[in-house]
Image 1: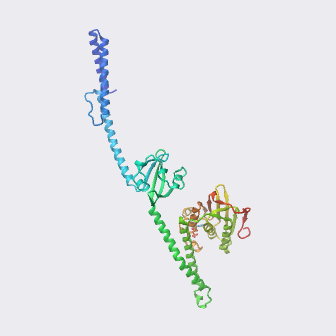
Image 2: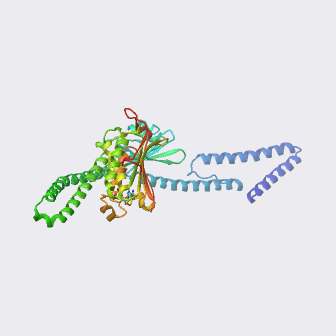
Image 3: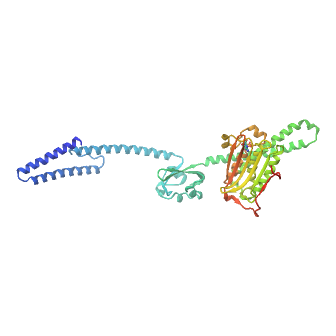
Length: 448
Ligand code: ADP
């Protein structure tokens, strides 16, 4: 107990004893004690009243004086708390101001949503990009404010992919990319960025590559044609030129191949030109590709085995699928030493439809695998060039699979071989007009 309390108790005791003595002198000690106790109580109540009035009168009001040591202590304590609270308030105010300035300066829209997807708060950029207004829209469901079709599904618990692109509600010319991040207790932050410029630049790059490829194709075809005519000629004067002409024809062919692949990639990347999906007879397609692979293998005499579920067709674009599957099979031939084994399997299981191309080739070191689908990424540039590669094959495979909602999985071990697996969703399964029995096909007409 503090000194002030002892002093108060002592004073109270002296006061009550004094009253008791005085009362005893006049023969009314109970009355005197009762009056003294009431007076002490009234005094304390008065101090309490003063404190309550002072607390209600705001922080600037003068504190009551002459309140006694204990009450002075209480007043001092409250004043200290008030000062601390004022300081904290000022600090929080400054922080809030800084936060508001920072969010106002953000070029991206930031929208805070509760667990019912109702708008709790949004920054200044949300008005410019999403047409939201804190005063008008606070508490309203975001799905009533942003009505883009895929957006509601995107807000759901299973968010795939992790961002969505849609035209800005305030301006069709703006393309926004939105992401959702968990925030605080059951709240979520919707972040929307203007990606129009990036997408425009990507489009320009795609168009540039497509235009250049297109412009180069005609002169190169003409040059190839002339070279072929010259090589077919019996003119003895051309005999000394035969070797260089062959080299020129080979290089022109390679350039044409690259141009064809670049045009294919440009077509695949262009969303507007996405080909319609039709049932594709994958077993027949694979049999054709396997025959071509046998021809490509030639004297290397690879053992190429095809195992395809004949009743399994795929909803997709035949041209794109042919390009993707042949790239995988031809790669297996090109990167597998002579007499090696190449297995092509087409089947369905619980997880979907799968094309697996496995070889016993040179294999790929693990650090190369994540980068294989990048354009012109080659493990060994010279090796790829000699074998007729363009460095675009797996990039085409990835884009074709993307367009079909599929995925490419690569596993490989150096010196043992590689397995490339294309996985499609079960919904893409199509049945042939008359389903034949499953059978095993070997492109060479015989087992290996
Ligand atoms: P390329 O035209 O050079 O073959 P791709 O995009 O088809 O280009 O393949 C990229 C690289 O991946 C190739 O250069 C090669 O090194 C490697 N690769 C692809 N398929 C295989 C395979 N079956 N076995 C080993 N390496 C492979």
